[in-house]
Image (cartoon, rainbow, N blue to C red):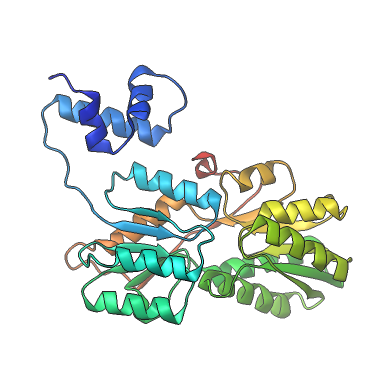
Length: 331
């Protein structure tokens, strides 16, 4: 075994000197996948083996802070090279500028979560015409703007939320509310549609009476939910199709409804897991971000004649404070 330097490990893994040092010297908290990447690289370089082939791709995400951290962690753990673009709360012009820059190189696939818009569709259609491979993740894009979509069945997720609320509230007249993100996100639109149609079909006594526009922002969600509760004080449950759950629970606390409101949201991560543990968020509907990234990469780099569907739907589950998944504790 030859001697391996920290610099070599940094170059191979893309990790910082401080992170590599923590692994090698057993100091501080390091994610298990990060530790495994360093240890595997150390062993391989010590044996004089050639590095594995580099997978080059880019990813651009307009998702909440909790999921952003999970996806970044999964990206680093996968040993990828390429740009990781954080588009959190970026407006359309900012998103378009950064996506246009990423599309200059037609040889690198792009994994993308963004709002649907005519301008984005035009940009991505042109890039695909030059050979750029576009994978929509989490939220679907217009069919001509992407090669494939990977994510959960968002309409089924909304139906699941309706089922939980209908069964929990019982067979009695009740009003409920929904916190909307932005229908330009196909996932938000599909969740809302699934929620509304399932209530009408299976729980006709449960009436969707209130709407709050949250835009995935904690502050906007808080203010919108406070107004919804003022307009509809008898609500028995709230379903949040997007982010901003901290603001939602803050509003319930201010309105004195924190203890008697059934609340259902999405994703399980560093933001929502404490809300589940604390009892403010009763149920969270989520899939595994590592599985999501792996599926996106399979579509970004299809092998030979691999028969991948244009739409790859992933499993999701309903989580409570009693069955938090392992991915809740990442990032």
